[in-house]
Length: 284
Image (cartoon, helix red, strand yellow):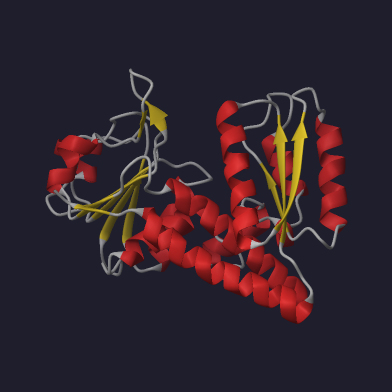
């Protein structure tokens, strides 16, 4: 059985440092990091995420601005709200919870958020900065994964890394962060031929496809590290990842569980980005 990479300790250590820096910023400069979270509609999963972000703000002594809006809220109304928050000096980070209702264009919304307050790192300006390796913010889930890998003491340098999934939120930026750490990276997706064979070549395998039990034992090399980003529900309604955990774990050197693996790191990295945005404001 591979070593379980639990985010509990890694996240707790990071949060302690973030809280310390947050309190120092407040005491020395009178600046309290502020995060505005906007939720449009009643998606149950999104409501849980927003609630967890609120708790994290309380724990780290951040100012939380929460906007729960009707699913009938128009795109123009949402863009106007973002415009107000862009100008609010007490708000350092703006996060619009995705997915949005069908009548609202996600890319238009993302582009309206000031790049300096885009703590999800989805604005094209921030995406471009990540591409060239000169960035202020990193996407929360990929950044959290890098922290988890580093916590094991395993070097990414020179490793064969396979990322399954090519989303703008996880897959693409994950590949870039691994590349910045001198890994040799392959991105796989639904059109990839010989998927199992490519996955089985990975020293570090990251799965972010959103399909329950998608990664099976024949797709994993003996001694590989497996990072499971999936948040799915199985046929019994139980939360599970992309990885067939029980059959894959014995082959691995390290593996993340679901729940309790990557998930908690995402919110911790969001808090880190918000703190950094507040510190940038102080420097200006």
